[in-house]
Length: 173
Picture: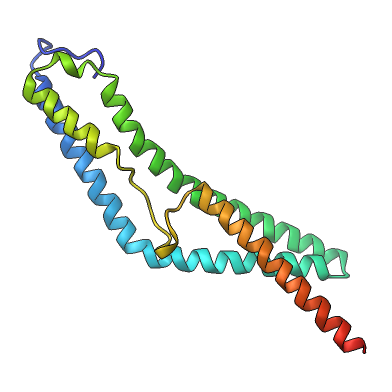
C-alpha cells in the first residue's frame, strides 16, 4: 500500500481499503471466536502444565536413580518446549495485530481523499487494541504469562521440597 496511488490501474484506493477493513474485521471475529472457544481449555492447560512441570521436576530432584533423573529432565524439557510453542504463537498474534496500526501509519494516508483517510484512521485506531488469546481470568497468553507459569512452578516446587523435607524429618524421629 505504500506505493499505491489513486491513479493506479483499475483498482481504487477506496476499494483496497474497504477490502483490508473487511479482512481485518474477519480476523478480529475469528480471534474472538477462537478465544471464546478456547478460554476454558487454555485455563486448564495453564493449571495442568504448571502442575506437571513442578511435579516431574520435583520427582527428578528427589530421585536417587540416574535413569529417573534423565527421564524427568527429558520430560520437563518436552513440556517446556510445548509451553513455549503454545505461548509464543499466542504472543505473535498480539504483536502482529499491533503491527497493523504501524503499517497503516507508514502509508501516505494523508494524501488520499478525506473519506479514505478517515477509514484508514479508524482502522488504525481499532488496530491499536491488540488481539489476544486469554488464559481464563488470569490474563492474556503471552511469553510474559509463560514466565509467570515458570515462577509458579518454582514456587510450587519449593513448597513441595519444604513439605517433603518436613515429612522426611518427621518420619525419622
